[in-house]
Amino acid sequence: MVEAVQRARAEGWTLRPVGSGHSSSPLVRTDGVLLDLSEMTGVLSHDVDAGRATVGVGTRLGDLGTQLYDLGLAMENLGDVDLQTIAGAVGTGTHGTGVRFGNLSTQVAGMRLVTGTGEVTEVSAEKSVELLPAVRLSLGVLGIATAVTLRVVPAYELHRQTWCSHIDWTLEHLDELQQRNAHMDFYWYPRSDETQIRILNPPDRSPDPRPQGTLGTDEVEPSHRALVKQRHLRFDEIEYMLPSEAFRACFAEVRRRIKTRHRREVAWRLLVRTIAADDICLSPAHGRATTTIACLHNASLPHDAYFSDMEAVFRAHGGRPHWGKKHSLTARDLRPLYPTWDTFAEIRRRLDPDGVFLTPDLADLLEAPS
Amino acid sequence: MSALGQRVWVLPGGLIPWPTHGEEPEFTGFDQLCILNTGDEAAEVTATIYYEDDEPAGPYRWTVGACRVRHVRFNDLVDPAAVRLGRPFGCVVRCQVPVVVQFVRQDTRIPGGLALMTTMAFPAS
Image 1 (cartoon, one colour):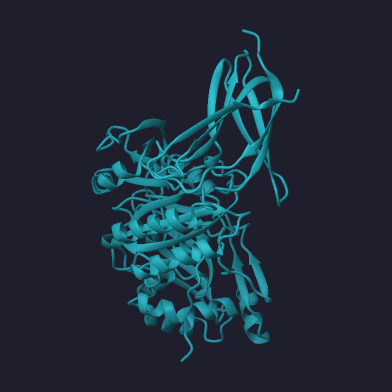
Image 2 (cartoon, each protein chain N blue to C red):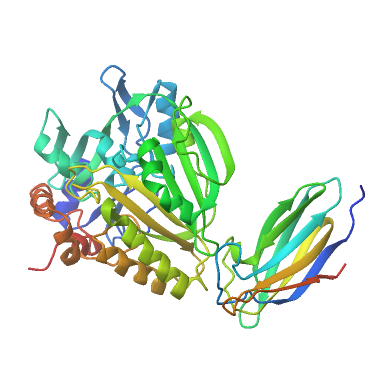
């Protein structure tokens, strides 16, 4: 890895690490060299008492969940897809739902990476701690991660229940549903105004309040299986992270526009989730309790007009885009949204002074023209 | 009970009414298939949708259990692709066992008005 970086630096290539290819934004596209890390898998070491596990960066979340479970451990929260590699997931701020849980990047306790100068750098609470808020979510522009240390918890089970309900009831009780349950999210279906409410709690805890509607799924499973949903449909997606206090006004306008402008073509669903605030430089939940809205649309149908109209609403309400999903923002738009943007930029230039990891797409995203 | 009906049904007159008025989902304008499986074996149903100006879409798939009925709104189909509201379409339904297929339309295009229309699909085999 060190040789690859040094050679790329000397000869002027760009290097990009490849995860599972789950992102739909061009974070990896390059005319240079792709580094396939899919052989760097598995739990490398773990400490149950300290609640730490160091894992290979190419480990897919689904496999990682199983391996941690076999060791009596688990990640404290997961997204609803487990196809991504751990490095890709934390590197893009992948998240699940739950007002008391940060995104997956917040579970990073340390990382070993080969920087753009070919140096091997350990980052943790004990070493180079000042870099931790940057490396936890870096889009792979600070270095090639070779191992990630995660903050983990004892393995646990969750009771997953879903209800088919109505948007009016869901919005009326949303605050209680989000605050009183460990994990809660909902889909809104624009062609019926119905919702699917999903609640996950420890098995000894009942849903509070119990949703009005028809109970669907009702299962108890280990957390790494309960938190993940199965999807086979090919779809495009835009997702923005909003300050939670702006959610209601934003969702009302999103709903109005879909019903009046887009419903002829848009049949699939929107997903609403929550994320706890954090202090990670490029985290879309930086400094604020966050509610997210994701629009999912058939990949075979045009999405430009729909997503563009939704993005205008999200931006008007202070939204920050998910790094791995579709959006149109560049550094000029993004910099004012992130209080520690310049801190990250300074660290990036220090760790990768020659831009070994900076493709033209990433330069558009991260380097505002002066 | 023996399976009643046919294995292939045809519906040429699809057009999900648009716009729609009134509380939802009760008054949402829709086109709907009603599939009755009176047999002892689950019916694996596939539908192909035909348009005036585009290639056919599908297959859309669902299961109707043995001795069960299932109502499917065209509005809700998303896999492999949503059906656009207000766009003429036709539909062919195929099944490995005999079933009976009926079509229902609820039309709320006029504010405060509601029209229901129903017909049997054409049994092609």
